[in-house]
Image 1 (cartoon, one colour):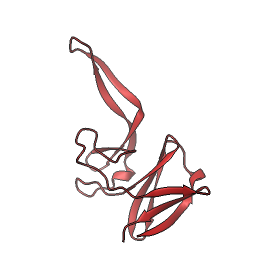
Image 2 (cartoon, rainbow, N blue to C red):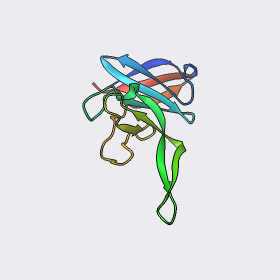
Image 3 (cartoon, rainbow, N blue to C red):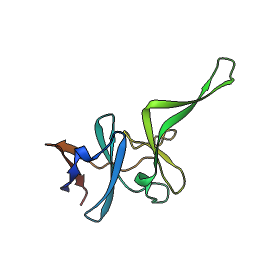
Image 4 (cartoon, rainbow, N blue to C red):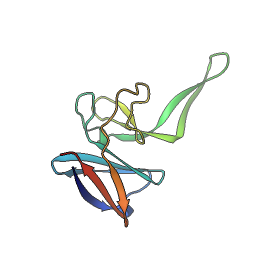
Length: 123
């Protein structure tokens, strides 16, 4: 494993992301709620560039007691990455698909030290 500096934390907006090619691997680094998260830029579905997709809030359908819809609600806490190839979604914080927790992105360790972002790559 090797640790690589990918740049200053101050270059990110919140929420936001940047995709880096580091050591032959593509890594998506995300800032959400003041915390950094990093994932391999590879969708488990068909190896699409998942980290380059849209960032959208988790949408849920609110239902009344009589089972009628109150309409869609958008989470202020959960933001998803949407793979541009086939629309698979993944929670930025956990890397997991919202309805099938067994489907997930591969985590890349990330840390911030003295204002710089470091990711740790697998050998």
